[in-house]
Image 1 (cartoon, rainbow, N blue to C red):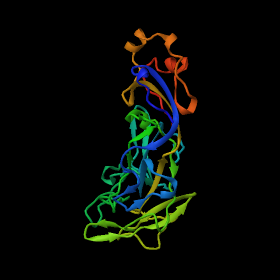
Image 2 (image 1 turned 180 degrees about the vertical axis):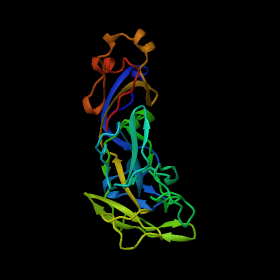
Image 3 (image 1 turned 45 degrees about the vertical axis):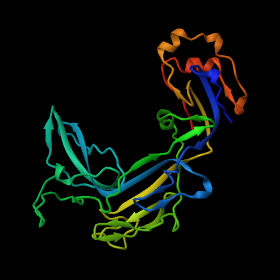
Image 4 (image 1 turned 120 degrees about the vertical axis):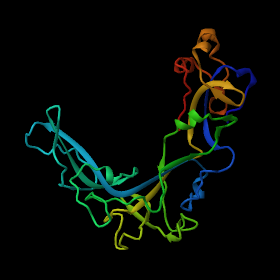
Length: 289
């Protein structure tokens, strides 16, 4: 595996090897949902939680004058034909349509432009979303420290690792099996749609008969994506201690390109090539995974 060579300090190095967790496995679990990773696949370097609520979403459309045509731009979910009052701006007709969709972003129905009529709860919109999602689980990403051999990856290099894979969920995927919601508890079910598995939560206002394929407004679904250790990594940077820094224009002015072709041991060491210089002239670190 790649090892540190003090002679390479301050020089461009191209490092190839397997990614390894460095430090605590902080991305192997999600304490909010009780999710725990499949330990047979190794430790997780990056864990992404995708949390969506099924809700009404407003779509704005424009078209010239009063010509016919819907101006429909397409969306997921069940599109309804209800429209807002038509208004005109710069010779264009502006109108709105509404559809139910799974969305990571919560849409405030009080800001909808639709025709309004006061309801029993005092609100004035026709397409009603919950005041807040229940449970209040939002999308997020966690990262653990990682290394290639003796080299610790920088935050920027970690951000360039994007080869996520879906996490399979089953009855053993959550330790608690439920999310604490105020004074009560919401126990999720594990459901699969389009080849992806989700934790599905049904608040009190949603029928128990609702499913991920026949959802009702207010339902919440959560899935996970992960980047596991032991992936192939190739990264380029200027060696600084046991890590890297970006190659800068100042480095370029003083760097002797004839000194770039040294070292090497293939995948068992550090290899420096002329290509490493050209890859870093713009002052960036490179990474992959």
